[in-house]
Image (cartoon, rainbow, N blue to C red; front, side):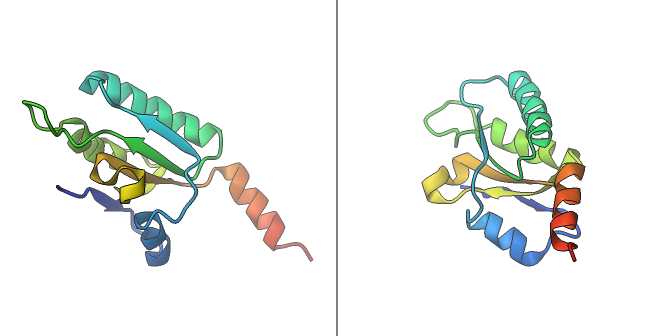
Length: 126
């Protein structure tokens, strides 16, 4: 079972480790089971867009392991190819067992400008 992983330059090692270990609350989920590659691509694109609109930082995408099928799992490898193309995606990693293991992937998204401003204001009050 292959693990998929990606970390953009600038993502702190501790942040990536916590993502990998499933320590962040999952704020949104997308299930790609029974979708074609085209349907899944559209769903992932819309999902990332919706997550950014709603200030979601950590999401879980379930794609399955492709077990018990005649063809190898396609969605997982497609997902590993699509996600780095989104500037909003900072990192991703195959999930822990309780969240679907190699049949699911954690996705860490960048903060929206609104959230960055809120954090800055909260930490810079005098």
